[in-house]
Length: 185
Length: 204
Figure 1 (cartoon, rainbow over the protein chains, first blue to last red):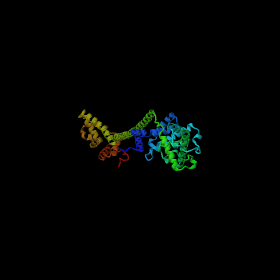
Figure 2 (cartoon, chains in turn cyan, red; figure 1 turned 180 degrees about the vertical axis):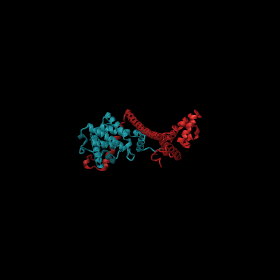
Figure 3 (cartoon, rainbow over the protein chains, first blue to last red; figure 1 turned 180 degrees about the horizontal axis):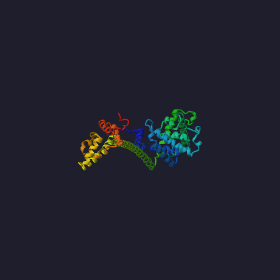
Figure 4 (spheres, rainbow over the protein chains, first blue to last red; figure 1 turned 90 degrees about the vertical axis):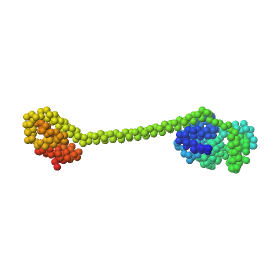
């Protein structure tokens, strides 16, 4: 049997099918949770924001139209929810990141795995908010450039730029700590 | 390969870096939401659907109530219409006739009692002098015709309907379109009250 699309499931849920929502939830809970957790770092806060994001998704079910990709719609809601949180708890200046930072040597070939994971996590935490958000939408949610641009309210070039800076900073951080990013390919 | 984006690193190099990062990313722990959170979200989703169903049912029940109220109003309106028809002028005339029938019965009772006394006969002659027999007979109602005119007591003249009452009955007959009865009653009235000026509508 053909697997039902996210859009079908969300439409079915809006029409009263709870099983459709359970399927949809199980499909997306991991990526969405990790996106929120890596945004804020703190599990308790991440849990609140994650739950709040789903609450918004559930309450907005009647407004959802199947013509819009569900995943992008879901991450847009979560993104806005997280950004609202940052606006409440962080000074405004921290949200405006310095895009001109970060330069350094190229990646090395081998990384020690444990150090790399820990270093990567720390490096993510140190990224400016907009770069971190863009990178998480790219790597955790697997969204394309245009969708990320739509979600974050920017354009494609800005998204590409943020991704480049984010990738460069992570490489730099990991190189300093462990000697580079291990490339499995 | 340089990592400085200001140096416009080639697209290919950037893609390689991104892929390498993605590989490292995949090795990060796959954090999952706690079970309690999952349950909370799923139960919220369920509650929302239940609330949605309740709201829908509530709206539907109000629709049914509206239809019921409309039906009730229609039934009440029909009942009132039927009631009004039952109390329309025609039944009123019947009621009026009923009054006269009561009077006829009174006449009949009186006639049975002192029937053939000399006083009655004298009275009957006296009545004949003042009111033609056929007029007296036709004056009250149809049933009066069925009664034996001979049985009329001497007080029959006094028992004629008053002119005003009679006129009222005549008007009712006219309103209800009982022209034959009206003509008959009108002739009787004219005979009984020849000098009475008929009201407009009856004098033509």
